[in-house]
Every structure is written in structure tokens, then in C-alpha cells.
Length: 43
Image (cartoon, rainbow, N blue to C red):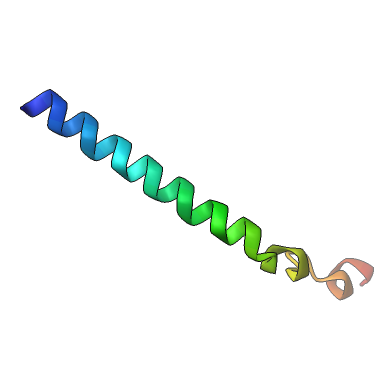
């Protein structure tokens, strides 16, 4: 069961991350995030 168990664990991990990132994307919070502060750029 070694290879099959590793494959199932890996695919479960990828699927879980995909679902989490999908719901984070759909929440829309990323639209209000500012990574670069414009005051720092303007000097």
C-alpha cells in the first residue's frame, strides 16, 4: 500500500488546498488588499 497511500495522501493534500484557495478567492477579500504602500513610492 506504500505507493497507493502516498498517492492518495498527495492528491488529498492538493484537493484540500485547491478547495481552500477557491473559497479564499471567492470571498473577495483580496480585492481590498494593498501590497505596495503608495506613500512609500511617492517619496
